[in-house]
Length: 167
Image (tube, rainbow, N blue to C red; front, side):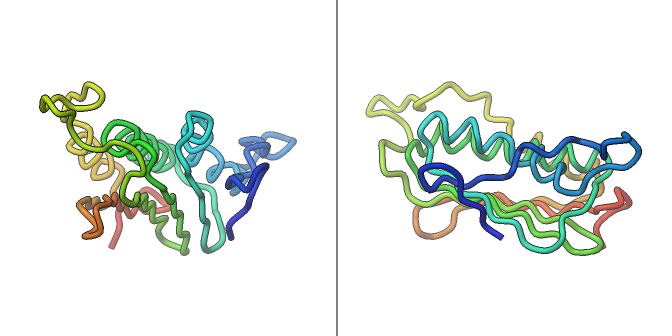
């Protein structure tokens, strides 16, 4: 399901509350909204980002939801730093046991990589992907990242919906 908002931008429906009106149960769509919230800020900063959700969104345990949000946040930060202007797709795929978070960007439409003097476009500590790998692992998931072959980059995490580990 791809939802488009104003001016053709993807809309994640960020109006869902985190819990039902009585505050008793998590609302499945709220997890999607929280996970993809960084896409809104990236679009506001001019990065072309779409969000695509497959499967039936479901409530996630807090460490899994936080890890999934952090994957999207770090991936989009990296696109801003290393491939500004690159078309970026955030995919969330839900099945009964896992949520897969995949962020893929294409080649940058603007300047990419280091500047002519070898400095990165924005400062970087160089530990973002290492930290993500650890965060996802601690939440019971798996993490992969690397170039796409067409000048883009992908980040792919699979997390257990129950928080018990991806099999």
